[in-house]
Image (tube, rainbow, N blue to C red; front, top):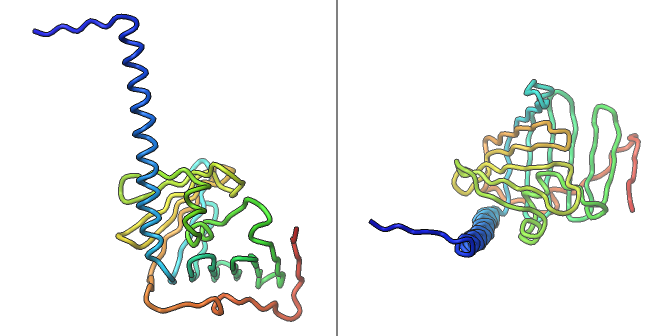
Length: 214
C-alpha cells in the first residue's frame, strides 16, 4: 500500500503545475482548432447554393424565417439574395458592402473596413489572419467550430460553423440581443467557378441611395 501525504508547499506546487498544464493544453487546443478550421476553409475557393434562415428570440420562440440563394468567393466576396418573405440583396467585396432593399427601393453602401462589424459570411469568406487574430476558436462535437470574437464589434457574441467533411453546411449565430439565428445551406455547388465580376453591383435607377462612408 502506497500512502502519499501532501504538505502545504507540496500541494501549492501541485496546483501551480496543474494550472500551467491546463493553460498549455488550452492554448494548444485553440491553436489546433484554428489550424483545422483554417485548413478546411482554405480548400473552399468558391461556393454557392440555397439557404434557409430562422431567427429565434431569447425564449426560443420563432421570430422570422427567410430563404434565398448565396454565392461566395474567397477571400472577400459574397452575395446574399433573400427571396422570401421579401426581396433583399447584400453584396460584399473587399472594399464595400452593399444592401439593396428591392421592395423599399433603397440602397446603402458601407465600407468594409470602417468598423469592427462583420457579417458571418464575411467571416466565412475571410482570410486566415482574420480568423486567427480576431476570434477564439474551439472545436465542438459533431464537426462544429465555435468562434467567439475577442476584438472589434462584429455584432454577434458567438458564431458556430457546422461542417460536413470539408464543406460548410450551416451556421448558428447568437447576436448581441441573445437571439439565435440558424442558417442551413443546401444544393451546394463547389465546382462552378466564380470571379470578382460576379459580385459587381450597379446601383439601379430610381432608388434612394445612402452612403455611410468614414
